[in-house]
Image (tube, rainbow over all chains, first blue to last red; front, side, top):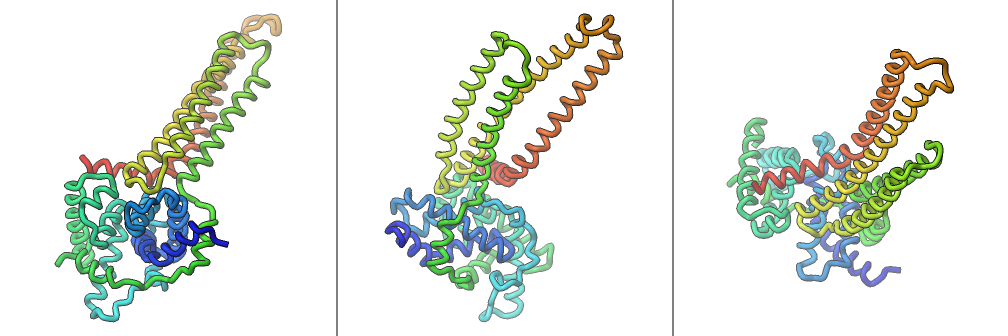
Length: 168
Length: 202
């Protein structure tokens, strides 16, 4: 039997689970690690849920807790191993509407992002999710100016990584 | 259009993830966390227990005869310090909240661990005092002419000092290895991320 709070939490998480999946996609390289991180995020979200007062949207609160779990709480020595199992079912990238060249470019981009460090991945995640720099700085606890500077450096770093590998 | 904008176009359309159903989520809620914080908590509790046990055993079995006044003072001091450490530890542990900003959360975890590290230094201090006391007793025992013939030779003194130093080196190396395996490896990633965040703001 679910408690009201538990049922409410499960409903919210079921609806917005892709937030967690997307973070897992950036921070893990294989299906087992993905599942493991997803579970740890779920546990941390549930532990923190009683203090969620609805001041922000569930999605905003959830991605912050989930990102913090990936960066500071999750412990898996395998998580930064290069993605040899990249083509498994979970991380398989489908680009039906992209041509072969674009498809290869996207694969190279995902691989390059996987090589970034945890903080850089967090910045990339928030950029991809269209978060503004005020929110990025608040989430990470750094100044807005520095978040912006770092983001530009990441873009340059990715460009260099891809040109070195002749990817994109 | 830069690389990340190309990625963003795909990112927003990407819904190619396994669907976790309500029952699976419910099961996850009741599973045990394996987070760094949980490990730190478990290790810290073991460290507190080991400290208490070592101190107790040292007084009960390793010392001979009545304790000197200074030893009683060290004993009381040790438990007062231990109590302060335990109270501070639980306060800091409760303060770790995943909804804080990343920098603050990382700082809080590191601060909690550092507190237990300081407790370890206090233990090292107590062990060193005990060790010096043991050496002092041993030195007097070999020089005790009531239980042996004549004064000890310089070879015996050198041998005694040599053995004590080797024992100390082995003991401290084992403790250092234990901490490397247990603590440094556990928090290496945390320190790396914290350093990155600090560098970002300077």
